[in-house]
Length: 93
Image (cartoon, rainbow, N blue to C red):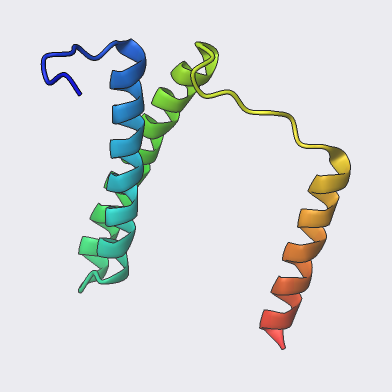
């Protein structure tokens, strides 16, 4: 790869989205290990802001056609809801 190659808008946004995904994952780990409620709440606030930024990047990429998604079929949605529902029921037992 040419190290002098310049990144275009798409590559910069892909990099930003990948970074945001990594950052939110790390904050989740930190929150799980927070020693006090105050630290946990502070990290939760930061995590919410990171998710907001991630959503903005994703929306922009999606609008530009750089992160396309397809509409889920109703039947597939219902199947997933049933799987999740049965999983939740087994956890209550």
